[in-house]
Structure formats: structure tokens, C-alpha cells
Length: 116
Length: 113
Image 1 (cartoon, rainbow over the protein chains, first blue to last red):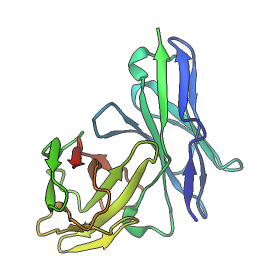
Image 2 (cartoon, each protein chain N blue to C red):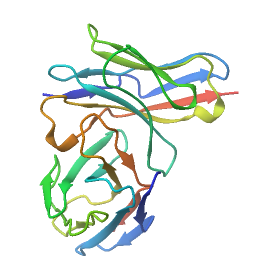
Image 3 (cartoon, chains in turn cyan, blue):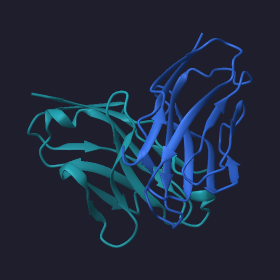
Image 4 (cartoon, each protein chain N blue to C red):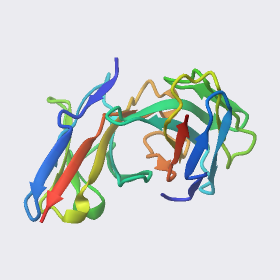
């Protein structure tokens, strides 16, 4: 079965420190991978995606993510966290072959808290 | 939140009543989706539509119905058969090509008492 796991419900980081939000997936073949961010009572905002090519993907607001095929991971990173980065982050995957109308499978989300 | 609007932002209903949530997009996207979000459970797909006048059940379609009469509109009806309808509902859309991200509306928080 296809699945996405975000092993940490919450990540706490001090402002200015690097941050990592972890994501691992279980999908047949090579998936498409996405990160989204959600602020309270708002919809999801797209951050970045991995389709093919360079394993390091750069996205919005200084975020980047590294695709690791052998570890089936797609961790979200940022070199220097801001208080305004505090939000709920979702990893999502899409099967490259068994498309199902573009269905995304989401992880359960990781709450990122950046303290001054 | 892109060019997707959802209304209303907050909705309150009594148990046993059907309620319809609106979703409109002006992005000229072919595909549209409805998700349900519950705390700690991520997003779960209710229904999706890849083209006008066609839609497919997602993972948790029971107790919900949709229509897709126009490309820009994809309303969701939460029926009285839905056993636990209180949730945050998110609509999304995307181009029909592969590998493209979905754009989300601001969501509707439905409370049923």
C-alpha cells in the first residue's frame, strides 16, 4: 500500500538554527514528491516538488528538500529558521504510474515551532 | 490560496441536515479535489474530478456527494449519512498533466451539532 510517514508530530527549533522536517514514503517505483505548508485555519500552500533530476530541490521561502531514493526519504530543510516559519508542514507523494487522477497521499503533518 | 475560493469559511448545521460546500476556481484547471482534514490525520481524499461531468470516489466518499457541471465549480454535499461530518474541508485543483502540484482553497470549517 502507498503511504507517507512524518515521524515527528512536532519539531522545535531556535530562530537562526537550521531546521529539518522528516518524510519517508512507500510507493511503487519512482514517485512524485511534494511539500506543503499550512498556517492556522488556512489552506495548504505549495512549497516545492521533486519530479526528476537533481536530488536537491529548492522551493519557496528558502526551503529545500533532498530526495534520497535508497532511504525512500524526502526531508525538508532550511539553513536558518525564522519565527514566521512556524506552521504545519505536510509531505505528499503521487504515484508516477498508478496515477488515480493525480491523487496525492499525505503524511499526517509535522508542527514546526520556531522560537526567538 | 491561488485562484480557488471556498465558501463559507465557517458553517454550522444541525445533525440530520444536508449541507453543500462551495468551491470555485478561475485557474482553468481540469482536475478538482475535495479533502477532509482532521487533527493528527493529515488530509484524506473524498472525491475528485478530472473533467466536467465526471468524478470518482476517493478514500472516504461514504456520506458525501459531488457534482461537476462546470469546469470552474465542484460543490461538495455533506449528507446526513456522514456519521462524523465535523471537520475542515479543503478543495484543490490542478492541471490534468502529470506531476503538477495541486492548489488549495482556504477551506471551510464545518461544525455539526
